[in-house]
Image (tube, rainbow, N blue to C red; front, side, top):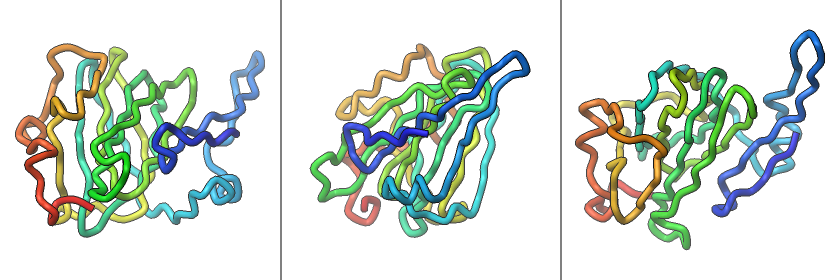
Length: 181
């Protein structure tokens, strides 16, 4: 397993070593010791799974008062996984990292606290599994508009399928200190 720092160093891309033969394949998707060596020393306490159809866009979401670090993987299909820095005093505030995660590449993305998260579905269907460092807490929920022109994310899809909630998130520049890290 290789754990690589992205252009925002706190966000890590996990590339597994895959052992394949005529029976199928084997890989390690999580090893606490290797994650700790890479600076990811987190106790994940909740696992989530979502199934989405092609063109779905989920996000951008984060929790303020009870923030969550996330370890995201796509176990079926293909997604573009995105993390946006919402830490006010960060040199990379408002910047994002996007990585294609799929059942073929088996890669994962680690997203620390202080980042909004979202993904778009590039295949006919995708099943996404992610570990969280704290429990879902509705009162902590925040979001940023998926089409914020200041962030300018290229999601890889046209006419995204969105929830009503995701359609109505505010733009990053309209958020106040109470909504940011």
